[in-house]
Length: 276
Picture 1 (cartoon, one colour):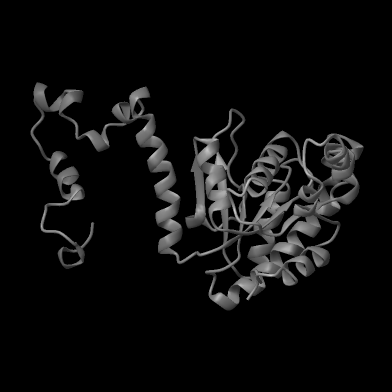
Picture 2 (spheres, rainbow, N blue to C red):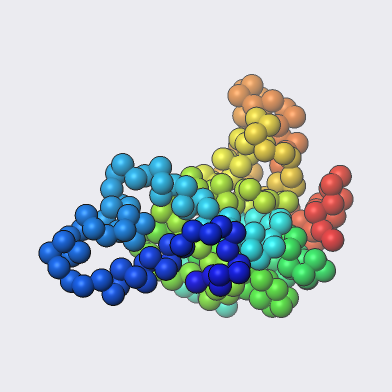
């Protein structure tokens, strides 16, 4: 609870009232759900009619925590949860997946190098931001940890839920119910977006971000796809342009690389520098 001299208004604060309700005598009236303070009543907050409130809360909580930490910009890392670390490639479901394991190391190296630069701003700029899970996400958070810096993990509740990877900075590890709000937080502070090989989730994140940039709903930032052969095989980018469904200049929104060095060079040479 805030100290009295830290408050900006003279009213009794909500935490005081929550504490007071715990000492109220138990009667049929005080035990009834209707008597419970609305903002402590989970059943009430989970009603369908309260969805707009939950959307707002899910937007506000990470925003307020990151603001309190002074985080101003991020380097986003999208990528597959199934990409194994090179020393775990024998556990990959397919030989093709095992062949992508070197991108785990490239993600780790890239995150480490960007975090080393982030430390120059005391962790305020260019903070690594991943989905908080295994695979490429783990590699990104691990690289940040190896550099001695912080990193963000934006998890989502899924039917096959598992704990976030152990490299996410604990007080910057968030859990979401709404995919839409999670994707907003990925992009709200993005100074660069990197996309590693992945599946449906990675494709969804990649195309939403590309659409926002293409339509001018988001300013252009370095948009870097790791895995030249993978991405040109999975998406026939030129065919989209040839068919006229995108403009030829839309292809210029994307850069293709295979290594962390190439990605860092693109960021370094961007008209608006992304690294301090």
